[in-house]
Length: 238
Image (tube, rainbow, N blue to C red; front, side):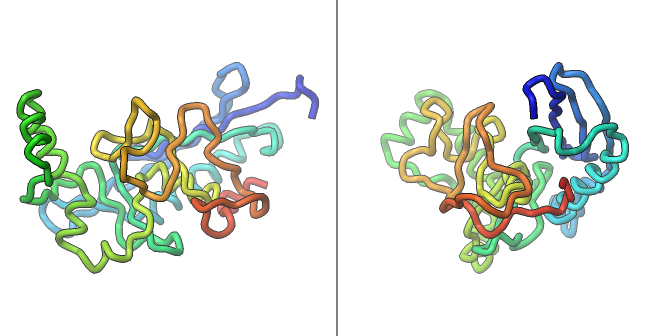
């Protein structure tokens, strides 16, 4: 395709109350958009807020299917897809990339009553910079800690622990990657060094803004240790 041919970007936004799919042209002009309202969460117990990860993905696909008829050009001219989602909603996956349970929403209020394991120096340092309360709060609210303490059998089966943005990227590309910009404070990621903190490896890559997260809808090409199985074609992009 020649360099002066039109090119388009598909932006997907999985918010708390809806999923939107929007196409922009190469000059940033809005071309078409669709919106699917979603049920934010279910609450099987007081304070719980969770939703099926497959429900989020199906809603994303529905938004795209609603968008396609609004385009007056071949979908092959969409050159890239960007993903943004509600922050801090997590999805635990097993070794085959299947959700082990519902996605836990950022609105969930479950907490643990334990404290982080800090050595004497770390504890004194946190108190000196008046961060001990924040560290304790992050520990209490981290969904990984709640699952490991209250559902240890499920936690033993967790192979990947993804944010919702990473789950959608996995469904789109078949690879375990996510954007640095999508990470939240209690994940052990060193934002200054742009890598995982020492001794932490969550078996997926966090890449910097503007970097390639993967290739959509392709079942061929090189795989890496962050990939599992073929990429999906659920959007029927081609």
